[in-house]
Image 1 (cartoon, protein in one colour):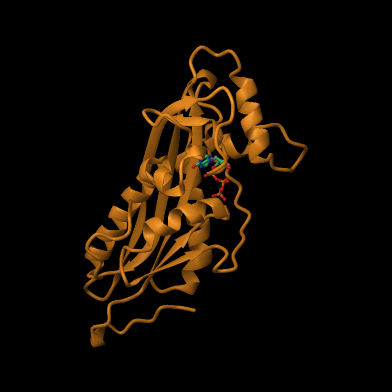
Image 2 (cartoon, rainbow, N blue to C red):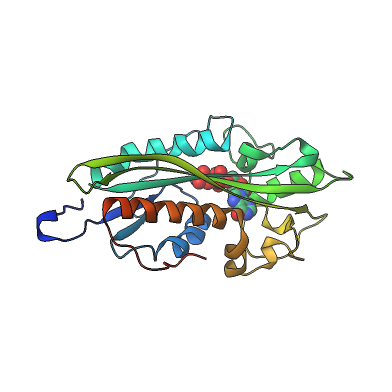
Amino acid sequence: MGTPIDRADGTPPLVAVVLATGNRDKVREFKPMLEGISPQLRLYSLDDLALSPEIEETEPTLEGNARLKAEALYSLAEPMFEWLIVLADDTGLEVNALGGAPGVRSARFAPAPDGSSPSYEDNVSHLLKSIDGAPVRTARFRTVIALKGRMPSRDGGCFMVDETVEGRIDGTITGERFGSGGFGYDPVFRPDGAGKTFAEMSLEEKNAISHRALAVRSATARIRDLMAHAGIPSTETGNHP
Ligand code: ITT
């Protein structure tokens, strides 16, 4: 693999954007938001690169875990591309009545037999049980995206990328499940002002307002800046929400 460039012939370099997630639901949401940034950008999921690293999310914060994933994936993907930006996200549902839990433990909230991962169903049931009778059911989804990369500089050298961006959305945990779209906690999360849960929305509706969309929008803006810094053309508006 690789993306050799010959700046002498005026060809702008190609930049690989690697989505550091094994969660296909998340890839499905990310792709349309990133695809239009630049004709020089190539988007890869872990599946595309046949990578399936086991990265333990051991940090106590979403930021820490996003950075951890980005760094681990960067070291695996870095030999494959000359220029690349790895995007790793960590998302948590923070429920006020639970002091901000499940937060970083959102994927592993429900008790599960040793070593196994609870299903989305298990986690939602556990959440509803945990806040049964709570007078306040406010919550927020928060997504942190870490960007880790190596980009060409205009003088023929390179510069490193190492930063995070964030998106969040406030809402309420409903008393029961509504809708069949989305994934994870979507059937019980109703964003403020929306009148329906994420699971009752189309992908487009969710992508217009979600925590992940907001974080991706910020990441997209940063990628555009980084491309500009490298002297690589972006499309006018891209394909972001
Ligand atoms: P990777 O670490 O492989 O990326 P993950 O499933 O662990 O995948 P996150 O840590 O980002 O993903 O998210 C933790 C859990 O939070 C996830 O398993 C879902 O249950 C839930 N979640 C994340 N994003 C969500 C969304 O947009 N809507 C509903 N639930 C979501």
